[in-house]
Amino acid sequence: MRKLYPNGKRKAFNITYDDGVLQDVRFVALLNRYGLKGTFNLNSQLMEEEFTWIHPCGMEVKRLSTEAVQGLYDGHEIASHTLTHPYMQELPEFEILRQQGEDKQRLEALFGREVRGFAVPFDYYSDLIARSAQICGFEYARMSDVSLSYVPCSDWYYWKTGVYHIMPELVPFVEGFLKSDQELAVCQIVGHSYDLDAEKLWETMEEICATIAAQEDVWPCTNLELVRYLKAMEQFDGVNRSNQTLWFEVDGRIISLLPGCSL
Ligand SMILES: [Zn+2]
Image 1 (spheres, rainbow, N blue to C red):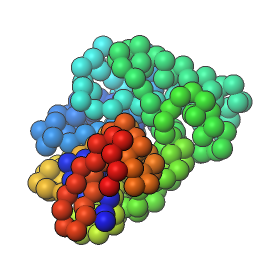
Image 2: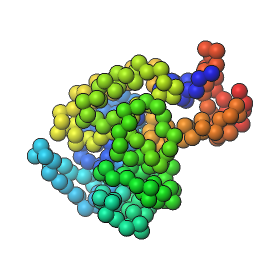
Image 3: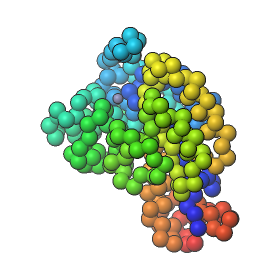
Image 4: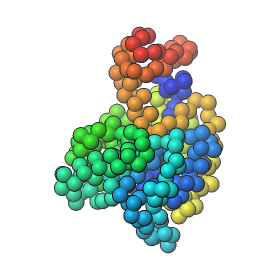
C-alpha cells in the first residue's frame, strides 16, 4: 500500500513567496497561467506604510499597498509574515505574540478569509516563536532553514523549506523531485518575487512552472492544503478518521477513502 495525494497524485508541489512585493503581480499571473498554487506571506502593517528598500543590486523593492492586493491572490493562500518584518530575536514575548496575532487578524479583515499559516521573517527561529504561532491559531509555522528534502514535514511548527530559489540547487532539486520515488514527496520552493528581477530568474521559474504543470502525478497545492492533507493522513490507522477524502494505491489500484471509511 502506498499513500497518495488527492485525486491519486503521488507528489505535491508548492511555491511560497514572502513580503508581498510589486513583482507578485507578474508572478501570480505566471502561476495562474500554469494552474499552480502559491502561498504568499504578507506583512499587513508594511502594506499600509508603502514601505520600500534598496536591494544590493540597486533596485528599489516596493511593497504592494492594501488597495493593490485586492483580488490579486485569489485562488492562492495568504499567510502571515508578522506585522512589520522585525528581527524576532530582539523581541519580548508579548511583542512576538502581537506581531503574529495582530497580523493574522488584520490580514483576515483585509482579505475576508481565514489566515492559518505563518512564515518567520529573516533567519532567526525559536521555541517561543513556534509556541506563539500555535497560540495565535496558526496551523503551521515555516522556518527559513532549507532541508533540500522531498520528505513531507511532520513537525508543523518547525517546517523547514525545500529549496530557496536563488540557490544553485534549484533546478537539480526540481529535477530530483520529478525522479524521486519518495512516498508523499513534496517539492517546496521559497523566495521573493523581487529576486526574479534581481537574479534574472523569471525564465528559470517559468520553465519550472511549465514542467510541473505538465506532470500527471503532481498535485499543485498551497502550504495550508498540504498541511491539512498530511495531518489527515497522519491520523489514518486503517480507518479514515479525518474529515477529508484520503487516497491510496493498493495492488496497483488507486483508491479513495471517504471520511469514516476503513481500508
Ligand atoms: Zn520576508
